[in-house]
Amino acid sequence: MEISPPIIQSALAGYTTPSFIQSILDNGAGIATFGGYSLDKLTNEGTIEIIKRNRKEILLPLDETEFQKWCHLNLNVKKSSDKQQIAINLRISKIDQEALRKINFLSKFIDIIELNAHCRQKEIVERRGGEYLLKDINRLDYILKKIRKASLKEKKIGIKIRGYIVKDKHKLVNVLESRSVDYLHVDCMEPGKPYANLKILTSFSELTDITLIGNNSVRNVKDVQQMIDAGASAVSIARPLIANPSSIKRLISECKTKGILK
Ligand SMILES: Cc1cc2nc3c(=O)[nH]c(=O)nc-3n(C[C@H](O)[C@H](O)[C@H](O)COP(=O)(O)O)c2cc1C
Image (spheres, rainbow, N blue to C red):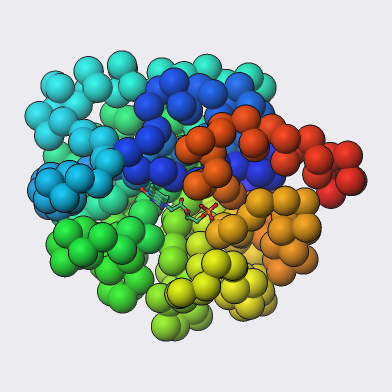
């Protein structure tokens, strides 16, 4: 999958208001990502619990009419180039008919549905969403199959994972390939460490030709180069963008100047 420029914004639950995403697009990111949002009744229930302990979240309406209104109000942003893409990161646990209709509806507004197999909040994991999916690959496979069926044909499907959780990379990659997933977005977090473990990315790049997006602690040109050397086709940034969405523009420009990006 082509990502241009190959520097993108990674999901930031609670922060992706339309004005935030607009600012990410205005600053030239290859992909701006809405969410993560909890799509179905179970993950919605988990998110209400998360909000109760004062973590910032944006709650999607459960009622379908309200959900559609919400999409019109919150997903209408303008790209600044034809190459830019808009993704939505979704936590999904219970994929019933209602969840499928919602996926179909929201896929009209965006280019990519990114399945969240990354969230580690206990309220989501205990409801079999987020990173739980990496421990139940059959369930992950079933959800990907359903998303593919429900979303509009031309839309892309990505998956965001927490790399160190994956026990059997072969099995995961086989499922992603068989479901024609367009990209694998890997958080290379090393528990307890303030840097990325690039070996995680390399081990995926040795197994598959799926487009890899490298994530975690990418802050400067050197970090971008190291992710690319480890097998990434693109890199993503999250935390620095909360305070300063324009930092993505600076990094893209520095990478272009140094000849890392065309
Ligand atoms: C406040 C906050 C909310 C986040 N929400 C999500 C999310 O909903 N879905 C997801 O896949 N990752 C989420 N992440 C993880 C980031 O996308 C990213 O993987 C992580 O922060 C490491 O990248 P960074 O070092 O550039 O920040 C969140 C991170 C933060 C700080």
